[in-house]
Structures are given as C-alpha cells and as structure tokens.
Length: 69
Image (cartoon, rainbow, N blue to C red):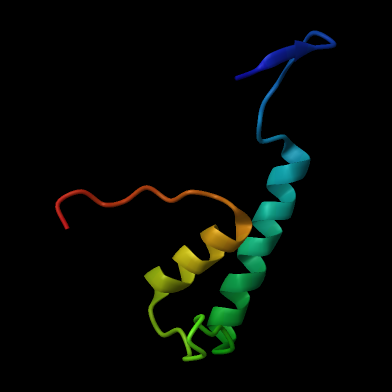
C-alpha cells in the first residue's frame, strides 16, 4: 500500500513512526532487564519471549509465530 508523494513512495510505517515504536520496545525491554516489567496480572515477567511479546504488543508491531510448536 504505498502511494507516490513528491516522487517517493509513502509507506504505512514511516521512519518517524518506527522510531517511536522502537523506542517503546527499548523501554519495555529495559524494564524487563531491570526486573521491573510486570504482566497484566501483576506478576513479574521472567521469560524473555514473554517480554518481547509484551514489547511488540505495546508498540503495535506484530511478531511472527513459530511453526510446529
């Protein structure tokens, strides 16, 4: 879904928007590293995969699922 604007394609994820999303992911992963990240139930997150899933969800990004598991 790209449109041409001023001779350049306009993508749905512009660099400015990705910067904000990357910053959100970095913030959540920092909280995980410090042991301050909590799940919705209030328990501390101990799994790296769970922390990544939370970060991607909060940033509005999708993560591909693994096949066969």
